[in-house]
Image (cartoon, one colour):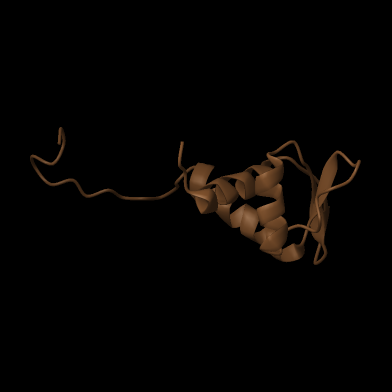
Length: 94
């Protein structure tokens, strides 16, 4: 199956935020790394994590990676608050 690797990277980075277990302000964070190796390597190439290859069960996220992960997590799975939706008559059911 063909798929959008950038979207996979976004969701994986968002999930890394979910499994963050150690945060160091200004330095990044540690997260459990049970994700696809190809995806982890792409996140490394994008500068969000250092080289993920190693025996450790967790990976360090750079500060940029942590902040991006938080942003993506909130965008993709965060609850929307205080949003007003304007629905015109006849718009429902389309």
